Image 1 (cartoon, rainbow, N blue to C red):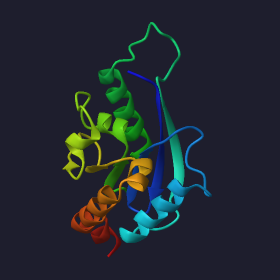
Image 2 (image 1 turned 135 degrees about the horizontal axis):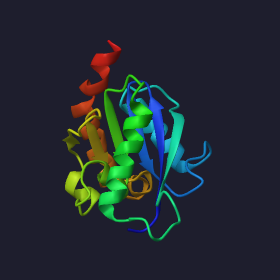
Image 3 (image 1 turned 60 degrees about the horizontal axis):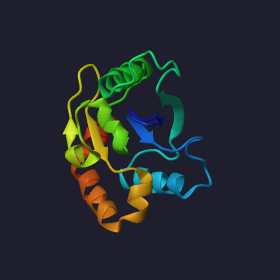
Image 4 (image 1 turned 45 degrees about the vertical axis):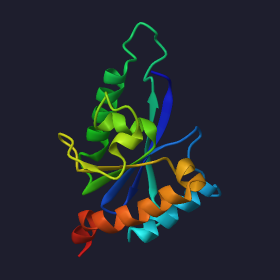
Length: 160
């Protein structure tokens, strides 16, 4: 499995797991502006707050297991530990490798895009393309707006 980098952001009752290039989202970037647009459309607080980073592989030691299964287990443990004390009602997952949170065998984000998945010991997770892909594919952005309208009750009930 090739290396990847994710950031965990918090926006009210929603955690956002975002696959991005290092050094991550920066406040002046187009990706960060799109994230804030998404949060406003979803009626979530803006701006989101950066909470933690996840690097894969966890170590540069080539003798350790760097498979998709190990990455999935590592990502799940990371999320469980970070969200344990948080009042989170759902997890938004942006990007290809975020599918590892749900399934180490998932071929692509397309397999889970537009779905809400139950994940053991975590709040429900919803999967969408990366912020970069959303910026370059207007049709994907349209699908995202409709999807957010459908699932908004996961976090708006918490705020009411």
